[in-house]
Amino acid sequence: MDSFDDLPMPLLPPLHLPGDAELAAAVRATPMAARFLDQSAPAELAGRTGLDTPDGEVEVLRDGSDEEVLRLWDEVCFVAVHPAELGGQEEAVTLTELFLSGEPRPVPPGILGELGLVAERPGDGSGSDEGPGDRPSELTPLGKWAARRVFASITGQQVPVFGSLAGKDAAALLQGLRSYAEDERREELTGWLSGRDRAKAAEEIAAAAAGASPLGRTVALQILDAELGDDGREALRGLLGTPRVGALVAARLGAERESSAEEIAWVLVDMAASLLEYGGDSEQVVEAMAMGMAPEEQAESISILAFGRHPDTGKVLLTLVERHPDPKVAAAARKALRRHRGLADG
Image 1 (cartoon, rainbow, N blue to C red):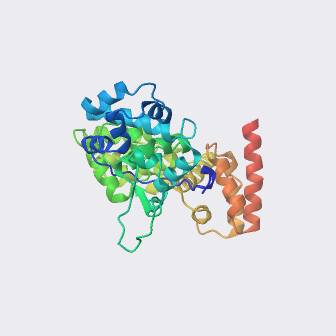
Image 2 (cartoon, one colour):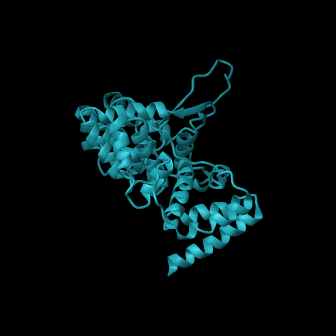
Image 3 (cartoon, rainbow, N blue to C red):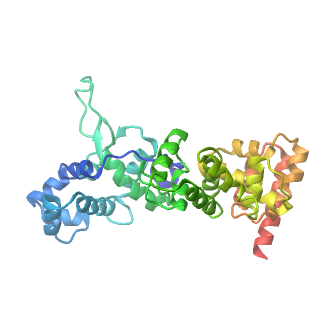
C-alpha cells in the first residue's frame, strides 16, 4: 500500500505492552542507541532524528531513568518516522500497516530496524538465499509502543494500552473501553474500581454517559446494567429522566417512559452510530435499523431520523442511502438526509 488512504482504520483493541523497564532496556539495545552511545557519525544522527546535538541524549540513554529514556525515544521515533517530520511516506505506511494488521511482511533495511521497531522472524533454515529485508518482519514490543503515537497523529485514533485506565476519570474510561473484548473490559474495569466506592463509581459512569461517544455510551449502559450490581442498576435507572439518554436507557431496560419523536429518532441514530464507531459493516447497520420491519415500514420510520438532532444523523442516513438494498428505503433515507442538511443549515 502506498498511502494512508489505502489503509482501513478500524477501532483497534488495546495494546498489551511490557513495563517501562523492559521497554527502556529495549531502547538501549537498539542499533541507533548504540550509535548514540559511541557517538559515531553525530552529524548523520542529527539529520535522521532531528536532534541538534547528541550529547544530552547520550547522557539520558546512559544514565537516565526509564521514563526519561522512553520520553527521549518517543520523540526520536516520531520525528524519524512521521512523514510530516523527517520520516518518509514508505516507512510511515509500513509501520502503520504492521500496526493495523499484526501480520508479518518483508521490511527493507532502514530506519525502522535501526530504531528497534521491527525485527525479522527467525527463519526455518530453508531460505538460505534470503537477503536483508526478504524475510517477513513484525513489530517488536518497542515498535508497537512507538507506532501508537504515529498512528494517533495520522488517524486521530488513540489506541488504549491495557492496564492504563485505572487512574483515569469515568469519561476516559468509557473512551478507552470501546474496543475491549468482554473479558478484557471486565479486567480493566476491576482495576479501575479498585480503591473506589462502587456506588460513587456507578454515579460517575452514569454522569459521563451523556457526553460519551455512541459506542462509549453503549459501554456505559452495559457496565451499569451488568457489571456493578444494584449500584449500577440504580444509577442506570437514575438516567431515565435525562433527555435523549433516558430514552436510550428505557429502550435497554424495557422501562415505561414517555419519549418524544425527537428522542426516538435520536436513540435510533445513536444505536446505529455505535455500530459504525466500532467498525461494523453497513449490513449490520441496515439490519439494526430495520428492527424486523418490512421495507415500507422502514421507509416510514426513517423519515423521522432527520429530526433527532444527533451529531451522527448525517453519517447514519448516508450509510442507508448508499448501502440499503431496498430502493424505497434508500430513497426515504435520501429524502431524510436532505431534510437533515436543510435543518442544519437553517
